Length: 174
Image (cartoon, rainbow, N blue to C red; front, side, top):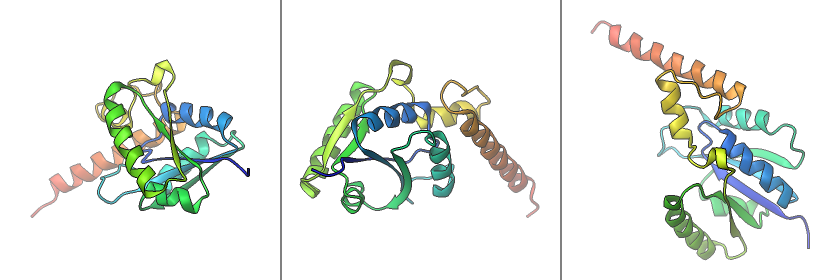
């Protein structure tokens, strides 16, 4: 049969401990897990793709069968180029199910050779999302329970830079 490769794709903006939880668990099921950082110009990301790849690489550096890369385009098409047999998806709450089911059906139509494997997060990460982490950090709250120390540091640095840019633009003379 060959190597069982799975693709776990997402924006990872920023990567959270919930993402790491799924990566660790998928790495026990598959021979290789590719973490694909999706580059989508339609979404306004806080971190650029290179920064997101660096953060995911750092948080997964001790997991031997994980590789991190960035990609553009359809996830299922990228899976094909990587010889992945499965797409890893996380199902946190019931509201995720409809979206993930719709995506799985569409991906199956686009590439019947790739299955979608849904993993439920560990209990501490059931309600965790990157969007919530950014919002908490934006208002100065602690995110140390949700991200690695390196991601936390980068997050607060990035938000401080954005605040400085906003202040500079506000104070600029016409």
